[in-house]
Length: 378
Image (cartoon, rainbow, N blue to C red; front, side, top):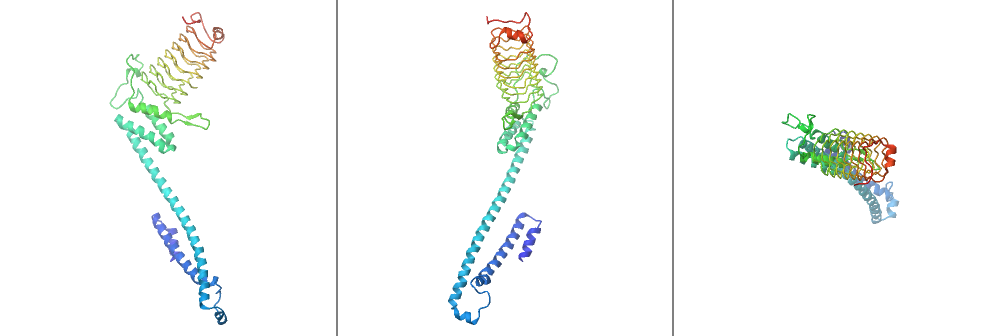
């Protein structure tokens, strides 16, 4: 019977709980058999009755003494068995807890998968408030399941790229004037939908970093289009905005620390007071951009187009402006301590009142002409 139950428990292909029942029956029968052997033959053997007693041995001990010896042996064996049972119970309990933990983890992963699937379905809704709920559901999911953070960041980044200011929405047939090359759009700044703003804000907070703190994976908004967009105070720290179209956008007081703006088009953008500390502004087009009071300490603007840009009182400490085009730029009152102007074009630029660099130092490394203005502020 014991062997049959044990074999069935091993070979059973049905539900797991049935295998556990068969294994339990086999163990119970084996335990009962072992206990019978212990309190019977084993106890008598331990008490000294290794062979049937002779008549002489029977006269040497009274019946009460023989019973006492056997009972003493049985007591010792029972104590030993009890200890083994306790140990076995502990092992069984640990196994049960481990199985319960695995079951709980499986259940939790299933719930997370269901929540993720539902949130993704919400992102595909035609209703803005439903999409907004899906975005915040994904944000909450990053707290409950950190291992899904990279996936959720990529999903939100793709949502932004697919719902940027120039993506045709259901029912639309033509792009807004600001998105075409037909001419300038002199209308007011465009307020982005709440769901796009939420994704644009949340995705950068999910950037991955290595042990040294350097960002390894950014929110990818590359080549997204937000011309004339109202992005006042936007939190785009460490975002990847490579090749993004931000022409005439309002980025006043925006957080662009460490953002990758390589080849981004910021023509005419308003960046007053924006925090532009970062290393990725190579070849950015900042023509006619308003950078008054912008904080740009340590930024790299190699080959950047700053023609006609307003850099009044901008903090350009240790900024790399190698080969940058600053033709007609307004740099009055700007701080250029430690800035690298090697090969920069400053023809027609206004450098009155600049701090941290002398006229002689500028002339020694940059291209200037008679229209370049030097001297104190008037």
